Amino acid sequence: MSELPGDVWRRIMVIGVENLVLDFEDLCRLSLICKRLYKLSNEDSLWSLMLHQDFYYDEEDGTIASKKDFYKLRYSQPYPHHPHHSIPLARARGIIFSLVNNPSIRSH
Image (tube, rainbow, N blue to C red; front, side, top):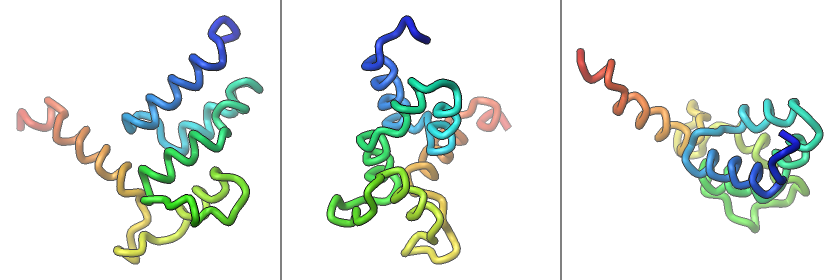
């Protein structure tokens, strides 16, 4: 891990979030690996991206200092349009996409 520069790791994380490969749990797990990944996985720019994807986040909504803390707060609240449903919209789309494109499911 120490062989790759921080910018490369940051880009890997951004690509993972943008393509719905990494979710908030994955970023939290990455933060446990080492100090370097802890620092990178807690950057506000990464959590801001997740907020935009999952909750249609408006920068003016951010009254909490940390974007990660704000994400946790929004994730724990029910989705406003569906009171009994708290899964982020982008993650739900990613789950549906993976199910639809799974060859073993289509063959049945």
